[in-house]
Length: 307
Image 1 (cartoon, helix red, strand yellow):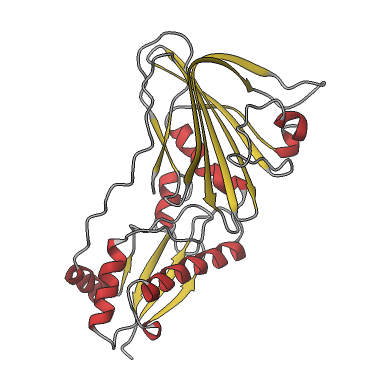
Image 2: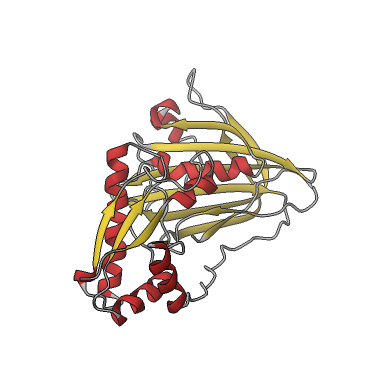
């Protein structure tokens, strides 16, 4: 997955603070970025109540980024959950985490600093807002996330304020994946009966496959093209976010996406590949952590009898 760089928010003059990378799928695209080297912003710190939304006045370098990502069947909680987990693991304290009407609906939305459409969109009945704080190196940092969706598109806005003069860290390009040796993949597949295609981009709740390239698919396709008698079943797996039936459907969609890629891009015969999904029934790590959920979101190739 590509790392969407999170610029840490800060107040006052303090020692430099390290940037934090939040993981967004490689299919996410940066729609807009606004950087103000020294300015003031008001971030909501509570839900709408008694005719007002409590807001915190912050001064510093303000950066706002809006991201778009495909989210077929994905809820706003599924978009937010991995980002929240990463923040908490990195020492951030969540001060506010609310959902739509719980936040205050329209009254909350108009009091939150949100970039304009079409770069950012907020469904008043389906959005989530998170405000977190962390103190490190003498600096108090804040981050605000606004997550919503419309149709098949998810919207994520990340707002940061940190000390004036902090360097702006740009989102890095995805690192190239070292090609997997075809002979090594074939040997493991034949010896163990299955392999996990671990370089695939599978975001939580997303059934689409990123553009790639994927070394594991190149090696698997070469193996199948070299032996027309070989057959594999692609089996999709998910984390435990969401219900069972939805996860089974999602896992099958992931396997189908991989099958389609093997056929259309790598010239594999459709008769050699089938797709199945078993949801969250076969985890290989705990679903209690972001890392564990990431490991559980996968597609495996299972070697079948020859035709």
